[in-house]
Length: 197
Image (cartoon, rainbow, N blue to C red):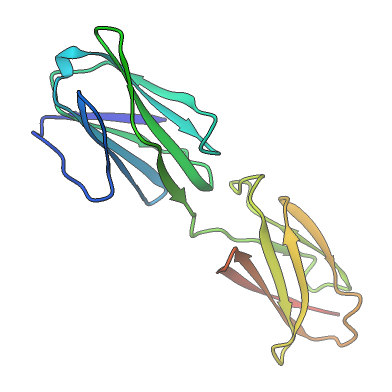
């Protein structure tokens, strides 16, 4: 669901925003609690026919995310409550009443959910172990799993390109408790323990 809010604020000044031509002053945004907040201002809304927020997952191929008719207002706010994990790209396109078109610079916002968890099955494990990632993880996103023994030695390192992946504990001779870490690039996301039978 997309939420549009219109308010009558004279002008918006914000660091990191992208200035852009004639009728639009700023196109800016920020990520907060899993939502992408987009905001922009118009100086002559009466000269605007329509506004389109376009969205892309690669920064090149854009699709119209929302089309908005101008009001007698200066500040516009739009919320994307269904961002994809990783970088989301947005662009504002304004169609003026005279047929001319203006486009903003591309705005990139990162969505990195902090509540990502994963399951290990079976646990305790005789050897073959499955890692289940949550369904809200992007199919294109690649995590990494690292397994350590009780003295801190790294014994397994695997990339997780899918929602379910298998790794083997058969090469581990000793029955013990092992630490399994899930990494997103260079950031530790969460940690689990697994018992080797």
